[in-house]
Image 1 (cartoon, rainbow, N blue to C red):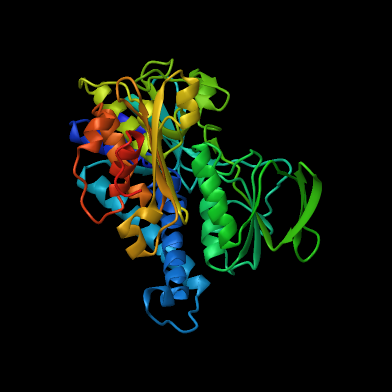
Image 2 (cartoon, rainbow, N blue to C red; image 1 turned 90 degrees about the vertical axis):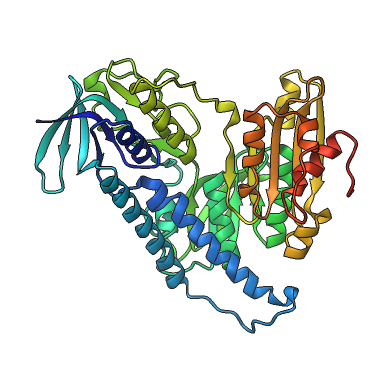
Length: 463
């Protein structure tokens, strides 16, 4: 039986990053993966969806070339080629992880892993052969998959999940997207920008319901302006797939409405992938569909750990990576601090993008803070005007007493690349006055952070 210091079950952004850090720290490491290296993120999530969104953005540029003094007569698209580009990029990223495994001398074991007592894992390969492996430490990083609703049974043709949505053979003329979180909003954006008639159905009162309310309302206005039909306080009660098109019965505050479309995309969140991996046999505790862990990702059973989507933290790739590194460093005896989940950035890569960190204005008030709030619209930004991207704003929230940066919320072009300033500032306990006195380059979109801060303190120049 092969023996390792660490075995990681799953090779997503949590698993493969944990494995690399373990190898860097001198630990003999193996990774078990049943499908493709890189997990959902690299193969079916973060990366290929961004490739699709980039194609849609370029298509929009072509359609609006005259806005930039250019001509691109009758721009057309090849939907199959768009999908192929996305898949090629995903494949390239997966091969990149394969290279990193070899570079760091990490053994890759392909197959379905099942946990066993005594810090062992049984791996069944695609030929049915089963091999047992042993390690001093086993890290569970099996991720998650799309959640299905009883009212939305997926048939892979007229009612689909996110995987099928990024590999459709033909672009649908119409689509109903159920759920307006990051996944639903991004697919609504992609298909709408590519020319599909999109209806976005959200159970909550606002789309992207976890965001600051002002961001949500601005996002809805922009989506409606793009031609997306937005239905909030609504739910799909049933679907009829018997005809040429799918008929969705949508329950709204005003009653039921039947909407026809070529396809319905279910994007109602994710479910942790913890079935059939041996948790019960080992005695690892779970709470609902999450594995119970402490601040350093140790389960209740010594020698077994869990990171990423299978744990109670935010189901985000960068969170999984951070957890994996922290977990391994703790195992290796490094001095580490618990992760601050109050300073995790969230990003939605739609058109426009959304990025946020920390408290919303409502949360800050509910927490009892006396706050200073500032907002700077991109319509007042020289770089945004020059770029033709004036929709959106930056909003900042500070504690009035001590100047603590409580939250930052952005909507607009490229804001997912800007939010790290707020994350770093909050990590370093930066105050509003320090942000205000930090010289930002001109002309840039990032100036809006400084200007929004100036607005909070009554010193804004360009409004």
